[in-house]
Length: 328
Image 1 (cartoon, rainbow, N blue to C red):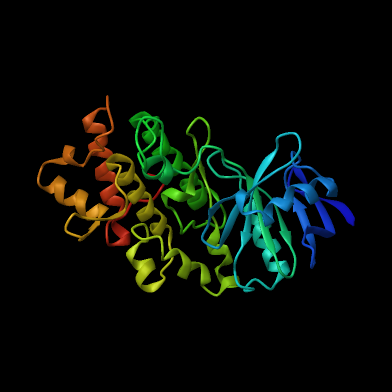
Image 2: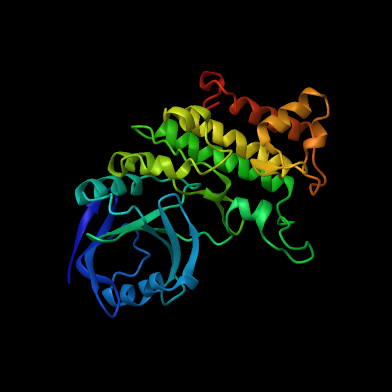
């Protein structure tokens, strides 16, 4: 094993080369481990123990657009999320991979999940990031069983003030990616499963910067997130036209999801497909905006919810030029 340090902005990256990071009885995977965070263990023995969880399905905590995500824990209570890329061998250029991950690792915003390192080998690529404990917005809104609420009910702690906090906490990192990063970074996969929540329900946006990998993946990533039904801007779904307005569209869907408690696409009693922004627009046009509100919400200002819904409808305009930017 060889180890060396290299300068990375004001911090230092710890590089471990020729490391048998993951092994089985039949083979050993040799590669290069780069750590951006000084809080992570730097001894090979710690990584050998911790990353054995990658071979254990009980550590699987989710699936991203281009990979599965595992929780890996080390002695001392340190946990990280490890994304094991499932790109069918499409990423073959190590220098390009390291360059793009390094650029994403340099991004810093309190509402972005912090990248903490990566691992490269010819047969496996891993992205290391901070572990966010409170799950994603989708599960908190729609998909978990909470005490006293019944199977599949939303989290009763997701009050309107917290939902508004989540809306703002999603807007801020998108504004940072679009307007503060040079060159701008497109997310292109904004959806409620990629909005993670910490213990205080502060947003940690994940899966950002996937567009940087598209040349390496030959548009494999675009094909994958076309499966994010209801969140994908029409120009992206129909002709793969990429712009910051694609993220604005998805953000608008998130706003409508927060107010209504509904999924972006649902089936009606008559087995018809109900698209959220069409449903909300129709009810508002009939002058019955309050019929859209999530019935589990209590103690809110009705006008505030209506204003958020109207913003969501503007953001989901069919014509990209009619959508606002994230800076206003």
